[in-house]
Image (cartoon, rainbow, N blue to C red; front, side, top):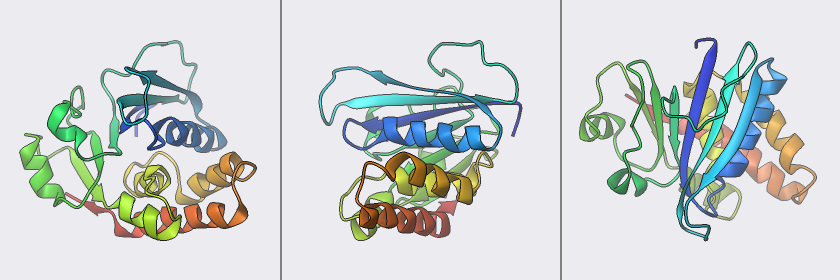
Length: 191
């Protein structure tokens, strides 16, 4: 990846986009990146569409605005693809990662993306339900991002989850998140 990586998370309130962006920032900082992580809310209610951003650089970060041209887009709720232009601003060498079951090649075609854009799909909601016991797709999406994004390693993502959630959640829930990250890393499909 380049010297600056910008990640835009699309989700709905309650899906963990803000938490996932913070965990990604922690993992990136541990790997030597300078980082910013911040949410953007519209209607502040559970279930409302929202965005969260992570900006990473090997040098100083002076830009303090929403991410308009993301290197990576992570979509926690596949239904947002119908109502929002999630691919807006993605460069020709960008990555779009979607929580869902759609074939990545079909999604790429449906979004009208060039062949050079990498599209990944993983059923993060099912993985989260089976490993964590709740349909919160954020940590599985971190695992898929570690596989496809070339930003942070799987080990860095896992360590950041332990560091961030380890003091807030029961050990069994943290271990469920570790399983979710690993499964999504292994199960993500790409086109």
